[in-house]
Length: 320
Length: 320
Ligand SMILES: NC(=O)c1ccc[n+]([C@@H]2O[C@H](COP(=O)([O-])OP(=O)(O)OC[C@H]3O[C@@H](n4cnc5c(N)ncnc54)[C@H](OP(=O)(O)O)[C@@H]3O)[C@@H](O)[C@H]2O)c1
Ligand SMILES: NC(=O)c1ccc[n+]([C@@H]2O[C@H](COP(=O)([O-])OP(=O)(O)OC[C@H]3O[C@@H](n4cnc5c(N)ncnc54)[C@H](OP(=O)(O)O)[C@@H]3O)[C@@H](O)[C@H]2O)c1
Image (cartoon, rainbow over all chains, first blue to last red; front, side):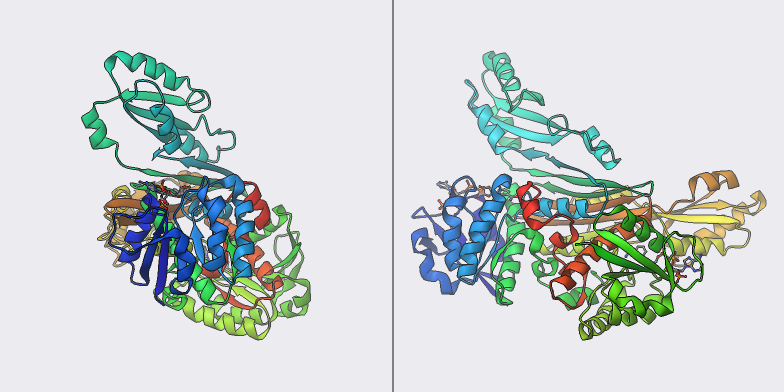
């Protein structure tokens, strides 16, 4: 099966999906749909308003637009015409998004896999798996080491900050506690540190440090460290978008501790989000091909559908 | 849904399943089927030959018998009468087992989930997930720290060995290499060490060490360390059945490494195998309840079916 793919939105995620589709044998790219007229790509670019005209040319449409407003406003509209995959990351509104996508997709015989990526996405899967294994599971999710967009934006609002980034880092002793079965009392604030790198005039350093570390909610409850670096060092070391984290679940089984851990160490958050998204895109095309319709969370998609290999092949080659 | 469970075979795994069923609200135990007449349990015990008489009393039958001969000889017979779950661990014959179970289960409107547990089982799921994410994945499975039954049996065959156990331990530098994206060349032998604990007369120590470390296939290709301990120390420290391991997959995404890791640290191998088996037992009962039949690998079972919670609840509580 050769899967014809479309991409909506050409930001970090859209570009990373384009790259993967070019690399994978079972996908081919039909084109990119954007609100902008010209994009820096060799692919064919279409105005997003015309997307529906190409519904018969596309097996799966990757919705690479923003979660804050684009997905709630536009996603169900796409599900009327296309089988879709998204990475919608507003955890508190997943149920709402799922319901809207289910209605639009079912009414039009399409499949919509919602909230893929890694969190939500692979982390959601591992949270559910971990919790399902024990009568009294203890579970912690830790994030990092990772660049936090929201917190980086916040430090850049402080007067005198010329450049700034913020990394979230899980505290090693919190991870160790969770692994040992003592994760019950760990709070999000005490189990994460925040490290900030700032470019600013030396005269401003003390005030900037003070303003950042006392910023309510964002930094005040956390162990926060502010480093001042030169513009050259910032340029060299802080251009990436690393991220990752851990889902750790433990449980007691007749007096024996068991620890189950899923972790990610990602040099590029958008590239990996795209990797998960594309695997679920493969599954979406197959689900549709098998005659299914409606919305699916990642929890409803059997894993063999993510793979380029057939189930029989996986059994015969010892993967199972 | 209250799931009525039966257990076939009352070894380590059967006892661990019995314990879990007693702990979980959504399961109740109908009884245990054994080849032995009396078992040390408060549950009702039935001769295994009579099992089929109770087919209408049982929603899911846990096949806790041995993989070497019991499963190939008996499992399909049970699938004619019951929805089953097993932990069949002969990787090279999973396809064969699946085909036999599929035929028996389909012909009788039952569900049979095969080769659950952790390897095969959760590790199989994570191998397939990891490989599905990257155009050119590099994947390694490491086992341990864990008690190896086969290797412990082998050391106990050496003349003069009064008691003996063998632990398999993954080499830390092999794990680090895999995480960094350099796992391609790692062989199973160079990435695992074997540690042996022996109780024997002092006069025999040198010969025993020599015989063990030079044992072809079992120990000769590995970095093997033999420790001699007192009977008391053996009694205190080497009665458990710990196990675990790592599935590590990395891939390059536009020049950025991504590392995906699933790991287990288990104080008791059979207890955790049972935990995975019971979660899949829940899924088997639901699949059957939804009107499905036939064999399923763990790769075909959507994760939400493993959980006591409903999908809607999981979406609404932020698990997704
Ligand atoms: N589930 C997960 O694990 C996970 C992880 C990471 C991110 N995400 C989600 O993925 C979403 C997309 O992330 P992203 O990094 O791709 O966001 P982004 O780079 O900000 O792109 C979002 C949209 O903004 C527009 N855009 C991008 N660059 C632009 C520019 N230079 N000028 C004008 N418009 C531009 C694009 O639409 P047009 O092409 O139409 O202009 C694009 O689709 C995020 O909202 C986040 O919620 C999920
Ligand atoms: N997939 C995985 O991750 C995984 C992990 C671990 C193990 N496993 C599999 O699980 C299978 C069962 O493991 P296990 O540790 O439960 O094996 P076990 O303790 O040797 O039990 C196997 C069978 O032997 C019989 N038996 C047990 N104790 C006995 C005794 N004292 N005297 C006579 N018969 C006895 C029982 O049948 P009766 O009650 O009928 O006598 C029992 O069902 C293994 O073969 C292995 O393949 C899979």
